[in-house]
Length: 190
Length: 179
Image (cartoon, rainbow over all chains, first blue to last red; front, side):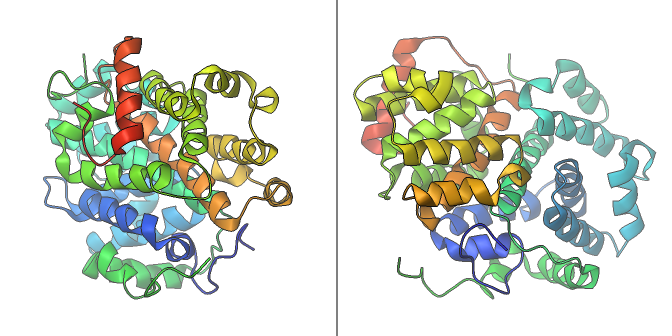
């Protein structure tokens, strides 16, 4: 049971977002621009970074839904998502994305862990400043989202089919559009 | 030197914000709602939570700028120093101590928050919105702190600059840059 009175039937972050629409707005806008805005990293690559960081933070809901969104962007390749989570150095992804995942993992442990060598290595594989910036911010943002979801004790059903379907929907329609299907029309009186 | 080519002369998070205005807008709005807009926890109390979490994450820029904002709200930095050193003996309400306990758990990882932590905060008068916002402030500063340190931003050790930033935050909130 969640630590506070979240709406029933809305698992994971959805219950938290619906509880407080005021903070839901910038949270949805941030994830929309980071994960789906025009970019040289594909949405699938960015979702892999989010999934990997959420796995390091052991957030079941986030790693499962973002893993499903990543797979939906990557032609349904759920095996690739699993390989990135297990050992991304052995996964069939670009050398550049591997270098960015190294940076993301450092940020997950704490921002000061990122070294000049990590950055030079990513640059030598073709990463731009914008790609490095967004990798740092995606990793940092998921250290927020994961803590938000677990810190409120949200419900996190163990039902992979549910995440797979919702992952396809978010990949197709986006975070802001999907949030409109479950957000209350206005904040509850309190 | 920062890890990427951030616009010069922008300390801490303002370097990241100037580099990428598209992500700065929602990040500023989130901070404004959580820390500045009216709520049942005073802005000073909420800045203390942000300062404490930033201090636990060892982010110099964030703990100093938010500490300055808290000090500006609370009429001095004595309580700020106490909260950072040992909030259980600080001159703050028992409710805020209970919320700081929750914030400290979230900083280490969301699963650390227990039903007992939440029940204790409720016994001392905390509402569900206050508990929600405490969890989200702590989580959000785990983002802001990593963003500021992960980009290797410029973090000058200039107390006058932080005092001015604190004053700007108290007077104008988070939507507009202070410089």
